[in-house]
Length: 101
Image (cartoon, rainbow, N blue to C red):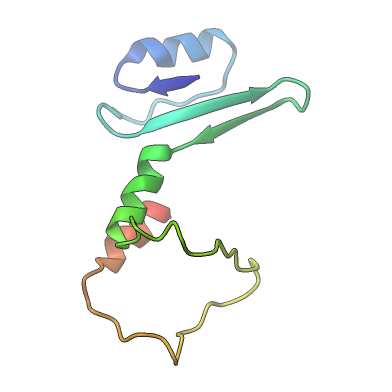
């Protein structure tokens, strides 16, 4: 199911299904959220595809599909790659971190 939260209609529909939501302001035109409901596990997963795409674009990684996917352990600090290419300064780090946070 894909919903855009650009109206209060969706909010009301979710509340009618006994979802515990708080309205914190307008999200009009904000993100598209994919909602996957796994009834067996009793879990609802919300995925922000547009946000993910914006972060990938902000990092300049639109054409990085050929690279292997690597997930760092959550207890590991990712250090600078001393052998890697020098930075170009093209990335707005504060914006990307804000989007992720």
